[in-house]
Figure 1 (cartoon, rainbow, N blue to C red):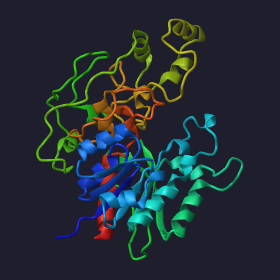
Figure 2 (figure 1 turned 45 degrees about the horizontal axis):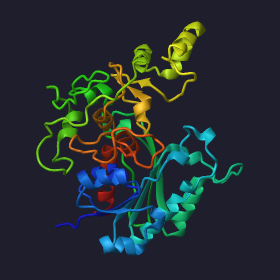
Figure 3 (figure 1 turned 90 degrees about the vertical axis):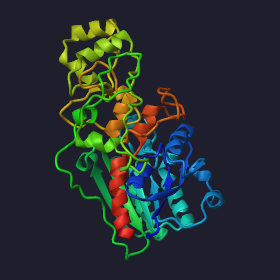
Figure 4 (figure 1 turned 60 degrees about the vertical axis):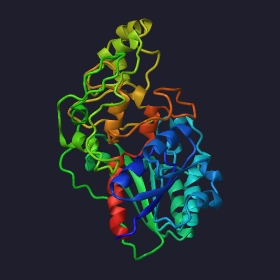
Length: 388
């Protein structure tokens, strides 16, 4: 019997990487996360993983050895991406201590003698400078730090989730790195024919009107390959059988004026478009009626298109996305479907909605910040092939 490949999950969030790795047959031994709401969700779904609740800066070798004694095959690090993102960058200082979190991940990799490191972040990390006005890039620092610590064999790559059967136009940047030159590093290659759409992801979810109080708990009698996969507990190694009870499918509450705004947005349009498609006098009237705000936000209120994959799911997805046919934001389960979380996954940590600046992450923010489990599954298969 082959020894199970082991994994340590840094910046683990609610468990997107662990979920995909578990489906690929990889055993996560330790997770490190500082946000309690994420830890509650993670521990509920992965009770066999030793979760260290702490800022990674303060996690010592002793902390890790208290919960796991052996070496680890793979370390993953999905560092907070806000500092590398282009969204809202004009209001953010050029330098941010979170840029240096890769140091901590490499430090942990050395503690556990990890054979492989996988870094994950937004593609904008490739253009982020170390200091304002300087030419040196953060990514060059990361490459140099990997090499200085022995991880001098590495492959950078940017992957599109739509290429791996996920109904979302999300791009993520990865680095896979190793110390051993005999490990033949590679990256996932898409073998998926066609794109999974928003309609495919939502096909069996019952209609849910804005401000509807009752949570829907029964699926519609519909089926397709994507939703069948997300309901298959055996595939995800989350138990036996098929999920037959719908969870987390209830409508967010909206003000009457917000619903009126949603009615004006066509599929593929967002809030910004309303300021340009109506005459100036109508825009002013809509603002006076408090249907439109005083200014537009470029990412806000995008109505999804049924026959296309979703735009990128982010931690702000509650404000950013509108249902393709209904005048409301998405339910937690709908967002989880677009991120490829299995239907058996329980988002127990945190409230449904809370102010975005809180350290507590609500259910939408947890899902939006996670690595899509189906993409993690593809990485898990590749890493298993490399190590075995």
